[in-house]
Length: 327
Image (cartoon, rainbow, N blue to C red; front, side):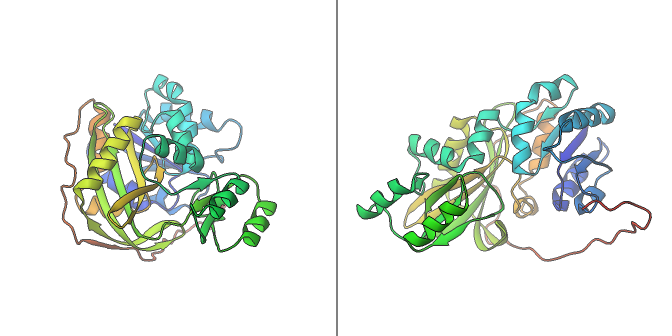
């Protein structure tokens, strides 16, 4: 069994974990559009590929799948998830199973306003969102929402172009400068992250790892501590199973008072997943078992609380004197 990790970038730990779980059973192949992506050097083999927006990209990836006899393939970046889900049948034809949720669901996750509407329709608490600023102003006058609020792209990741604003003038400037923006209620509460796995065979949620976020950096969890809450476990399990997610899901949650609000959903490994793995929530092993045709047992919350994750800077040094450097 060989696993292909697309757009590996700086996610060294994910590559390492799959190599560890596949030891003696197969290889991990990685790709990136830059040969300065450190994670690719952790793989058994890597390929330098075009950017995902370039014509012919999917054909390059399919060729790699055939050449390397890939069993399962997944991506670590948001824009590629839709592409992978949309081309699912083409991957299956060459024997590679995309580990990704259905296309329409992936598209909904990438569109923050669509996700807001989905959560609202399901009766799940979430922060108010507006794509029409005039509607927001009316809600403001009626006392349904107040400043500060976030102004952010409807589609986007890594906290790019997110602004916390305190008045109408700032909103007008941002809406004049950028297209496809939305206004989101500021959630003033305790922030949690959940690493969730939904079995690809049974469709059941088999793992949930909950962490209280202590510090964020560039949209990712920098420091966190493991936590448990039966009520939140039940909310998340019901949500992912009803929606039809499969594989790895990263979910952001706020607790305000005694109520939980789902904020964002990313159908991929989250940047803070190493915290879960090191606490014993082994999603690579679950992926591998599914690709072998087996179901995973439900083991939600089987980890210790009070275990902290602290990210820190590390460097990789490579001799590339006779290699063209592609950044």
